[in-house]
Length: 130
Image (cartoon, rainbow, N blue to C red; front, side):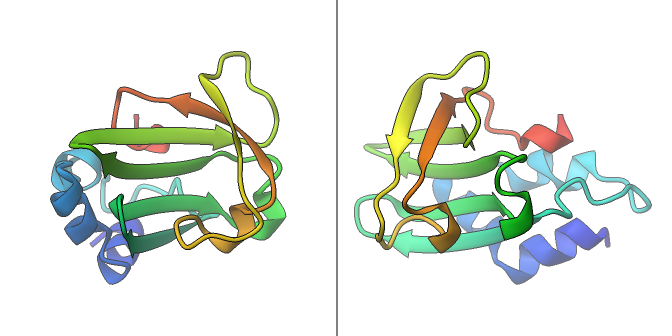
C-alpha cells in the first residue's frame, strides 16, 4: 500500500470522505502508484467532527511550510460539498478572504489567527493528485 494511503486510512480520511460524499478511491487509491512519491509529505491530515459541518478533512502544511504551501479542506454545509484551497500569500485568483479566529474547534490549530485567501474549488480531488 502507498505510504499516503496508509496515513489517510490511519487518520480515517477514507471514512470521513465517505460521510462527506466524496469517492475516496477515485481521489486517492486510483491515482497513486505503489512507488510514486508522497505528494503530501509536507502536509498533516486532520479529521474533525464538529456541529453544523459534521466531518471536516484538512490537509494542512507542516508549521515550517505554512507560508509557502496551501491548506486544503473538505466539508459539507447545508447538503453542499465544499473543497477549499487556502493560501497565506495572495494567489492570482481567489474567491474570498477568511480571517481565521484565534480559537475554534473547526480548524487545525496552526491555521488560526491568520488571514487566508480562499479558492472555492469545484473539483473535490486533491490538488497534488491532479
